[in-house]
Length: 273
Length: 292
Image (tube, rainbow over all chains, first blue to last red; front, side, top):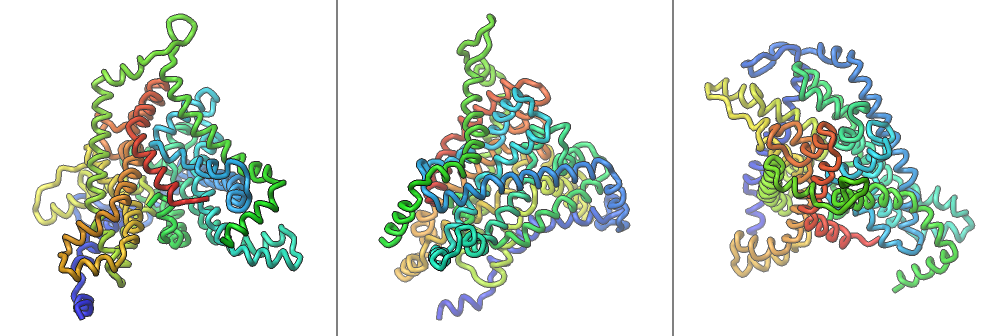
């Protein structure tokens, strides 16, 4: 009875949290969104004097914007491709095969997470300096590739382990080849989680700013790096706002497709919870 | 037991082929060795084995001595420690109540709160910096609203040490909430109801039943936060003051603008030293939860 009474009571705590989080998390983003579609907004008017798409045309006409969009997309594609190429077979091996040192090698991917990230990047940059990789495309690819390893191995390992072994064995028993079993039984079951891992590593690489800035600048200019220079040196507010909206697109896709993976408990456990 | 038998069976079948497994994992493991382990060892080595007056190298702690006697470097270290501490405290104070609410509430409102608490994960920190400048910066939205009701402008946190604090807390809310929620999953309803049945007040339940069970999750969340914030770069670089600056921007400037890699690597080794306890604790907790 007590519980019934409680459920009928208005959830004041929840309302407080909802209002506070809306103010702190949603409103700042709405302000940026509004700026992107504003032609004129002079202080001290509370709402813009003129809405419009003028600054979209101007921003998209800039060569540096297109250059950095191309750079970001090709970097993220290359890193994700290489990462999938080397990590997915490794994940399969960790999940299914037995070999000496399997456990210690599996946990070695945590090594990068025991150290503060930017300090590690500076230490890597010290090595790249001797190898003349500073300011090159492949230097940035390498540093971003290392950042994707943990996710691209641990999430697919869990996916492969979740596949029902009995189905695979049944298929083998009726004469399917190992490749056929992998293609028809293993992959369809592990596929969605692996796809989420690939999407997350693409999006994570797309937004990776620190490695790109430390290793790539000034030759390699990705979209987030261009955004930093807009924030620091660009007096026209709308350029930054339009770029923010463009920059958010990959996150939007991650939000649509990978949310279930992130909300599940296994994701938080991957962070040591 | 069948599981052990089955896995023995598999191992038996694959025994002749174990190099295949090693071959498949070789490339990522090589990358970890070359791009994580080796740079760290080399960083320590390069900062204590310096070129001397002659042609050779000799052991010297000169760069560390310089760092700890240089007031500017010490100020930067100080502001980094201050920011990390303040952020960790604020995150615990903000996220523990949210996680507690989400653990016990049901329904649409709770789903909305959870959605919002996780949402910052889908906002890159560079967009966040821009949003903070537009809202809290000079003539930002807060100033506009205050002005419209005739109040004076705020003292903007933009370009003060509070700018990065606001950004870093915002950025770290989702993972802190997720880690705490996962820890709260270990608190059973029975334990709480049993305590309530013998007349424990909500505060007593929180203190004696819930907090002891999630203290490990709080430590994990704090370690993760400390590791992330101590050497954060983007938010302090964009939102913070030019001096004193946090270790992230300081290392970047020393490396690229001052062009003194040895000093930058010294600073990196110092950040490693300050975070090593949190790093080891964090990695140990992650490893404990995850058997391959």
